[in-house]
Image 1 (cartoon, one colour):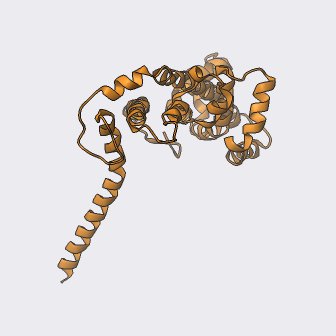
Image 2 (cartoon, rainbow, N blue to C red; image 1 turned 120 degrees about the vertical axis):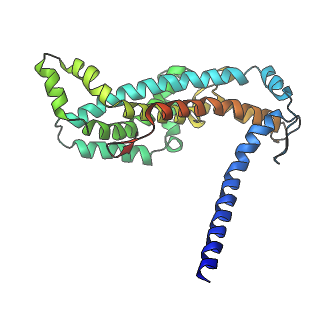
Image 3 (tube, rainbow, N blue to C red; image 1 turned 135 degrees about the horizontal axis):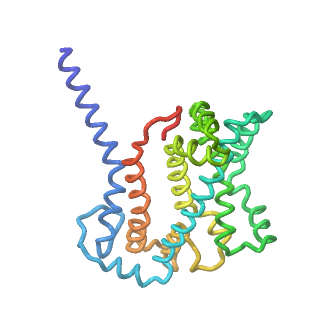
Length: 274
């Protein structure tokens, strides 16, 4: 009797796992098949293997350029975030600043409480006064400012795990502070830098609110905003264009994740997933 119960429990467990897997796999299956279906619906079905949807998407003057716009915003925001976070995290980790932990947690708390929705009016007014509306620089600076507190907090943990003896050895051989930072510190925290880089790119790649708020020209809009334009005049979604664009929109992030995962393996370093 006990053996029968054990078998029934295992069968029930495997059925549950199969149902949960199917629940999460069906949207992904739809995303892969719908772009190749001439008239896609919300149901998952065998595709027609047509490229008509891709040709229709190519006729949209803003669709494919918006992917380039997203790449530009993501790249520059990532570079600024990683660079500024590395400098700030190193200073907070190694320098004995009074109240540094309180400052760090306060920055993290404020960045969590004051979200983009709550700050959109003052951000818009600030960009208007600085004449940075409809400018890439304005959007990049706003996105970088929103990501920096959490990036500093995460990267500081990586800095804390690096032995101080490495820096002292470099200084003994005559290295200045900039050389120590560039040749000793950064190579030792590369997993942390990769973590921040991927995190920043993903956040900017999927950000809708700030680009929608700060850009005025349709040709400058990133992909997250352009995706919201594939609706008919009656408000009905154009599933052919939405599914095709969503597939192209998701490919760069997936490729980046696979590359970084293969390169760094997302091992645990210093208590944080690296």
